[in-house]
Image 1 (cartoon, rainbow, N blue to C red):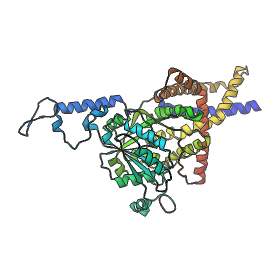
Image 2: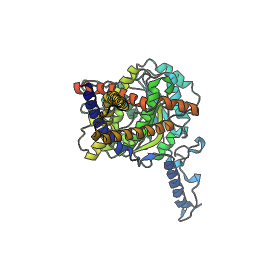
Image 3: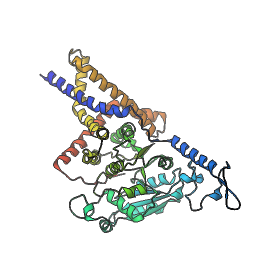
Image 4: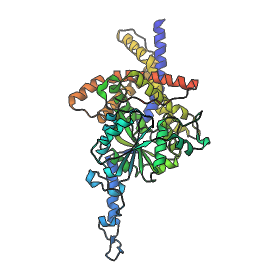
Length: 480
């Protein structure tokens, strides 16, 4: 009786894996056409050089000699243009350098963590004079004084401004019909803080806005790639991983898990409907004005903004670089964070107006990948039991008709595992070959399967919240 029950559960879980893996294959077999990499920069440089060659030469009398094939001079460029890129080592031509506004919402943050992020921004291969950072905080945040002191003590030319959120002014900015949450007042969300700062600072339409968390770190050519990518796409988004791999098993496993997901699934979902990933997305201010900024009551404001951008026809490019942030090492904090993240897509699953292909892509990258994690709760132990019974000579445990399906699931798992290694090796900067080997031994296909299974906890909690109609709350993830 027990054997029959095990086989029945095995069959059901393999069918569930098959459905989820079929959705994965539609994403795994393609590569995003909107990948932003060094080739994008080369195209921008080549196009600028071509424009310079075609530009007529200025005559001493103020006229122009048509058809003269010589490069333009610096005197021909307006003195009020963007800062020159040469001093920063930026490869972009001056015409592609745009003012970049970095919004960093904080609440009860560590001054040391934020300082590391500002150092990372200041050392970008992008003109520092073209970068402005805005640290957005609540007036009652008790840590702001210490953060201010740490920022003031820094010794570089990076422009940093503190912006205190005025909720009364933000409420006056929105008409009553604009509110989509119950009750009164302005919700204390990241979206509300971003909206207040963006509205108050009144950026020009051509300025590029990006959002960083206090712990966000990006490769040093990310700003350069973002500016280049925005010549071809309306919005660009970097991939993600975790950098605190020495803080415990959760950050170590997440570093590979998130890198693989963002490289294999997210990057190949850029055709949309897409979400944004909460940090290191770059969007012109004019696009944000058109989208009416962020949705104030959205706990996952990145998801809401991405879906709104897709519906407006905005194209998304994927920067071939990985954001490195801090993953909670504490299990309870990790579950709280993921519980909020995984619920983000639920309110958009039945969005009207999407084509069948758009809805299928959105479900494939969200719900069906969550299905795989939940299936692991039974699929892993039952699969190991069936494997043991097969190896010990219990003939006929697996029905012959099921073998092709099992083989398909196995091939997809092996391929995804290999691509996960490749993504992690690209995303994480290892100090030595031995460190990379040690990492690869600990974060292996089995431990990654266990990590994926752990996601079933926040997924089930989020589903229960959605069914019961519990309003999600915005909790700040502690960063040490």
